Length: 151
Length: 151
DNA sequence: TTTCTTGTAACAATTTAGATTACAGGAGGA
DNA sequence: TCCTCCTGTAATCTAAATTGTTACAAGAAA
Image 1 (cartoon, each protein chain N blue to C red):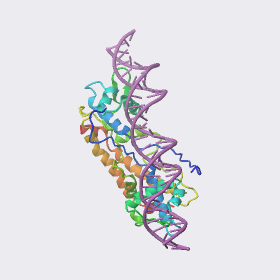
Image 2: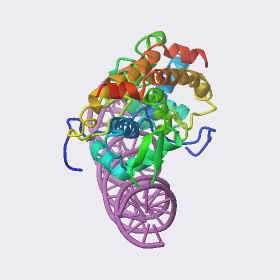
Image 3: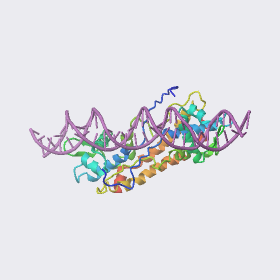
Image 4: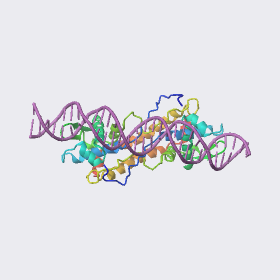
């Protein structure tokens, strides 16, 4: 098993974690409560039902992606742009883009000496990318405002 | 946190594991070597670069899905139908359909007393389903024969 | 300056996948 | 029929990742 190391690494990034729906929940809350009441990670935490630190970590990712504005001190969480301009794809990349692995995980050590093993990567990659692209395209069509409209 | 249990359960099935690309690799091998040489889980294991037991487990899933025919005794692994009739979606459902969770994981305990938390589920589910559908639709268009054609 | 809240480190607990060993039980050839 | 090969499957282990939790430094506003 310790034979042919591939350039692919054994890296495991899993796929879409709860972070994604949590992030959407956060944005929906911010949008909904903006102007009505101060929004803190603690409040978000209680609406979402996960630990406040988890919320803060995701908050940071959304901030880094330019989706949220955050100031310390008293309650300073707000959308950095209109909810109509934030797509689920934006949220997905903000929150999930760790290692850039995409949806699929490729097994790490196909045997290069096997006619199939040596080419499976190149033979499959294009298709996987197509699928991922279709997935992302649909995500780009759905906006945070679409979600909040249903609330 | 042990407050409001949702009907959603805390069930976590992760998403697309290596099983998927391994399964495709298996099918490509079977297709490629059929008639040329006997195919065993051991041989597949060495082409794929994962343990033979892992291969066998996936073999069973593919068999259960009606994609492969397997007999015990000597080398009896073959496609149960033409490679043109096996889509990546078939493989995906065969291998990944554990619990039927789909691509997304929903956080388990949104607060039902919060106007957002109480509705986030219903507000998001449709969109998530749309995205998943787009993903699956593209998968249905790609066949094992497309993969082997590139080998 | 005081207070609130973010930003972040450190670590435990949980979960999942894949690796490995072991072995019972068909299937087919000799 | 017997022998051998290989599948089917359980049990256990390891590694990786995610979430939960505690704790605290630092920034912003009142």
